[in-house]
Length: 136
Figure 1 (tube, rainbow, N blue to C red):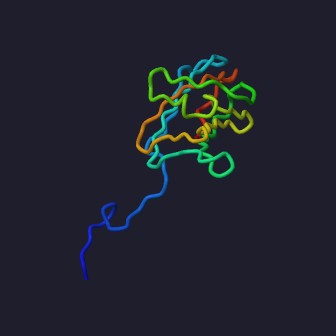
Figure 2 (cartoon, rainbow, N blue to C red):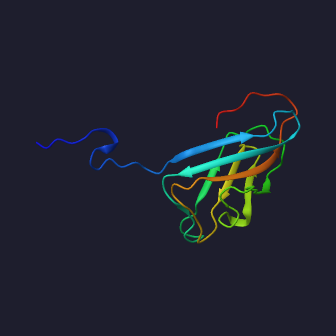
Figure 3 (cartoon, rainbow, N blue to C red):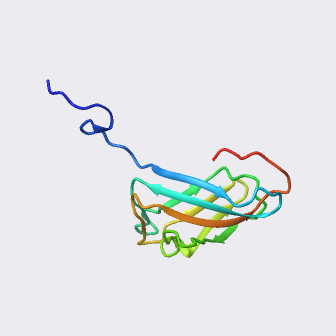
């Protein structure tokens, strides 16, 4: 029998789609304050929207329960990081208060490239009462 290396170097060891980097940070811990969330993502595969009716690249971040803002679309800012404004549909993040979910949709014909680090900001309002950080 042939010998082969183990672990990640073994022949035909293949990983599925995953985020190599997935971080969320914040600018304020003060109750009721406007809070700039900084999201940093890096995927091991490209994320794209081929056609609106076929394949839609949506990235959801859930568990952000407690922000006061009502459901809606919030503008993206990137402050000099890898520009996502031309890639994300409408240059907005969709917010759903009841589930604490931010959703970013890749625009039709656009692509977030594999291995590229993308960082963007969105501003939400902290709750009026102190709370621990929820699991994301």
